[in-house]
Image 1 (cartoon, rainbow, N blue to C red):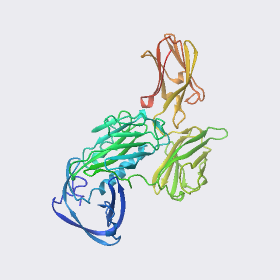
Image 2: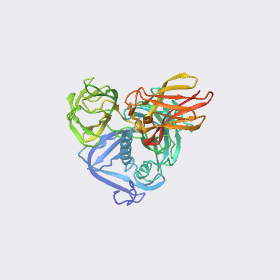
Image 3: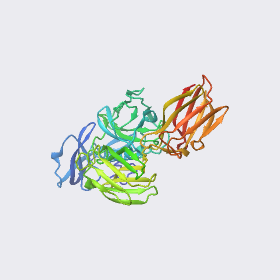
Image 4: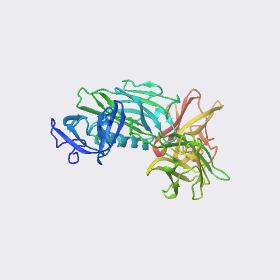
Length: 485
């Protein structure tokens, strides 16, 4: 009925005020839980979009039986655009597919958000997964967007990576708290100042006055500039009705998924050993027998593939062992994957496939660790005063990826806010006006890794100094060390 209509979800051939009869065979009838209570979803024949009836009315529908269902056509408005529909069809069934698509995009982008409660005037979502490491809250922005445009076309228009548009409120939380305008609240579950698994975001809504108005919203988790890209990104979709916020609690997140985190890495000799462990898994990750793996190199060439089972597996010169540590026959928290024998520093990509869908992956350099974020963060520690004019500090790459190539960084020194000199770590040291900045490598001379130090000599008393570590590939600051001499 919608195929020939210019706007998706519009029964444009039907006149408001008329009643039609939809006939077919019941293919499936089940309960879908939402923030406005349970709905009975009924699929007829092979149609992809269910009819949705408020409450549990499954007793009215027998799978395999024929039915004739009346639909009273009304003139609705979705984001202000008129469309013809009935209370049961195509809303709210069709937006369920939009929620599924946007949820999948969110999980691929790195921040999986799942509903954890709420309704009708506030919804709470939980950070269910990330890419294996958490990053400081200061690097993220929570953006509440009032969508403009028709179903899916409107929502997908905010995924182009451009600056924020139609933003109701944007906010960067620093910990537990509520945004200035009160639309958003954040709970730092672990109290670690990071956007991490288990953290919760609560979004408040507003009800349209008319039962015929439907206004969709997006929560976008993005970089500090509000652009949907960067280290990690996430999305959550719902729409407002006169009864409150309609969010899909079922079917809007992948039922099977696995997130791996770093455990330990050894470059050898005699061999490289890389260990990972499950830090999050889906509600029903499925038995190991339903999963397969795909191992590839940095050029995309497949090295090995096959079924997954506890114990030894893998090929192509690598030895892999999966440890089912709780013995439940499925991926769950704490399960361990150990890979041995990789070529040191060689990049490997490990993909986990469940029923022909990729639902977990690992990227790592053999013996050195996994890299999950898209932007290395540099932290300074163990600041040591050498004398009245000299000081040094240890600098390390934070996160799951424990090193970065030195050539990708530039060190910048400012004195009292004035740029003084720059240094690429591969150049060891540089001087100007009697001040010297030296990069002291503590490990591999080609890598910015554990044990590296930055030393400053010839500092003048009473002046403030800032060392900035600038990441050239992303043209962004990875870390800052500020002190007064």
